[in-house]
Image 1 (cartoon, rainbow, N blue to C red):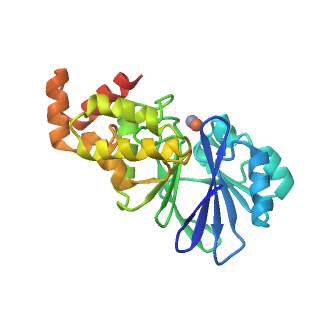
Image 2 (cartoon, rainbow, N blue to C red):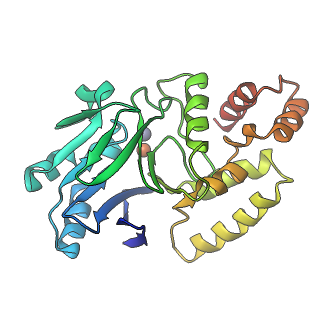
Length: 260
Ligand code: ZN
Ligand code: FE
């Protein structure tokens, strides 16, 4: 378990399954202990025991099993409140509170922004607590989720929305995919100095068996190939090389298809 300090809470990061991360958000001034995307109930139970606190909430970013599999067992054990997107209410096990993007939401005293990050799935949402972003499979370290249900347009909208967050926002995504993603990034963005630095840094981090996550919005904007279309020079160069239109959406679509 790795822990990160924010002013009003701590975030605990728990590795699960092959490459998932489960997050626990532990408030400093209240009893709130919320889990984001519990892939595995037993790992969460162990962490609650270690912290010596009962679980109060489950927050799901989307309905995929590797983000919701722990819902039922955790609900039974802790009688906690399950929060998910109204759009996906029938696909999220044991949902109690149905939330919608851009509507105000509070976890006790903690204000939460709910963002629509549809694309990977239609009802995918992200939760923003102050400077902590929980984005599930919408954005990864140097990558983004596959588009299973939405359109390229919708996914590009979602990524642009995330890019508007403050630069120092910590990106707590749900998978450790960073190194393979960086190999693709290097192939399509070879002259990017920030990317070279990140490859060096994250490779060292993984050699020490530490997580490359959280990254920050600033790091993703400068190195994530699926946010690079926000940069006009990048679009021009990429479009020229592949003989496509240099609009950000066209460049994004080409990149997402090239990644496979
Ligand atoms: Zn997913
Ligand atoms: Fe996933």
